[in-house]
Image (tube, rainbow, N blue to C red; front, side, top):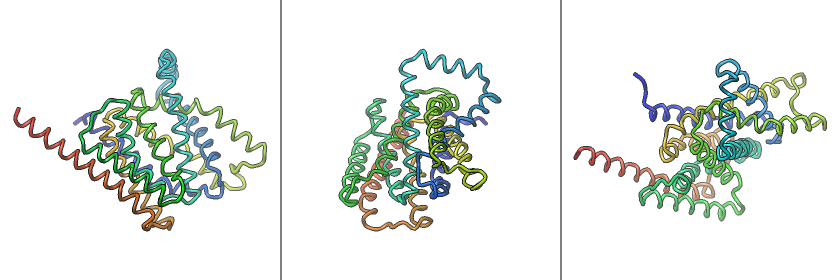
Length: 307
């Protein structure tokens, strides 16, 4: 039995967010690097190489050329793809940098915030009209951000950066509505000159950490960044194309649960009143949003029953 588009979207999106939830364990390998940008440069390069092989074997360069030609004919899609490439790179960087800097719990808090930011973008850019409870949920999340700023005593950079960039990426992919693998390939190829240039610069300065002879384990981890990045991105893009931003926002709760749990139980980061208070507001927003979804589902079921 063939699954519906929405069911396929749920499966792909769920797989992507579970994958991302466990990624801090992988990023922790790069603690000796201490430079998130070097990791992201390698991520872009190896992802690009992987996608090149994929296109050559499974897609075909003729189809890829047609896709690129179609994109170039639309100024809007060209700009959207370029923006998606930049936002994706920034999101991956902040995830790596947050783990290296010991802010995994803050990343988790920010990832909890992402679904409500995603819904807010759906309201602004896609004219989605949610019920009153969703507006209350967004307000509670914003209150959580304000409390976070007061509690942390500084701007919660990692939390807000990870949430805003990922919400923006989801909205951009929703706006594009193009082939998942081919769009990811174009995004990656657009960023490859910068990535290769940066890696070459580090190598010339003697500051590169990529050394298969001196540290083969770390070198292998650099190469693996391509697979670790490409697989969930493709799954997410397929899911985003098949789901509304509201449903996509709900599935996103999987990743922050896993990230916060890793921060507390694996990385041993503190999780006390300072972290719980702002997170409580965000959780309140999530609870209100879920209540609104249940209420809307019941109303829809009753209308269908009457008709």
